[in-house]
Length: 130
Image (spheres, one colour):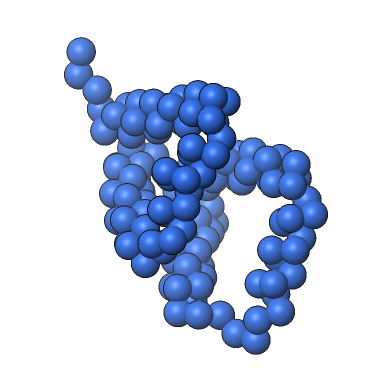
C-alpha cells in the first residue's frame, strides 16, 4: 500500500495524537516534563522546527487542496482549539491579558501577521477574482 503525502502527514499526526492522549491519560506530568517543558524551554529551536514543519505540510497541502479548502480546515481546527481553551478560561484570560499589555509586537509576531495577511489575500483572490 502506497500512501500519498497527505496520507503520510495525516498518519503521522494521528499516531502522535494517539500517543499524546494515551500518555496524558496515564501520566500527565510525564508528558509535561518530557515534551511540553523541553519544547517551551527551547523556544527558539522549537519555533524553527515547527516553522519548517508548517512550510513542508503547507507545501503538500497546496499541491492537493485549494486555499479555500485549507482555510475551511483551519476554521474547523480553530473551533476545536477554542473549545479546548474554554476549559481553562481563567488561565487563558490571564495569559491573554499579559500579551495585550505589551506595547508592541516582536519580530516573530510581525512575521506571523505578514504570513496570515498573505494567506488571506490569496484566499480573497481565489474567492473573488478567479
